[in-house]
Amino acid sequence: MKRMLETLGTREPAGLHVCTLLLKPGKLTVPLNIEYTAMEIPNDFIVGYGLDYDQQGRNLRDIYTLVKE
Image 1: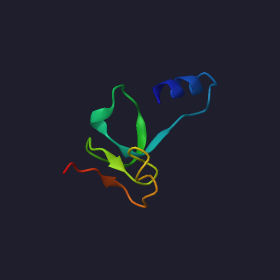
Image 2 (image 1 turned 120 degrees about the vertical axis):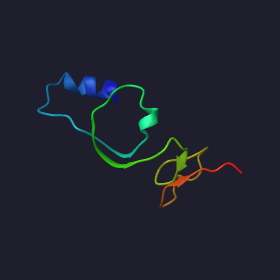
Image 3 (image 1 turned 90 degrees about the horizontal axis):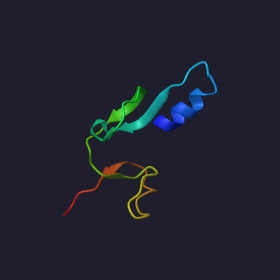
């Protein structure tokens, strides 16, 4: 994301804004100005709504946390 913002910034846009559906604050390795966040979540592995684990779970309608048994 940082590199994409830097690249887009070279085109001198009037503004750049970052939004995300899910934000894991503990996983951010570089400072980003994320202006719009739908939900902050813990550092858990999640699947569903386009997110998968080993090509499975991507087509789930909701978002779930994987739990080790």
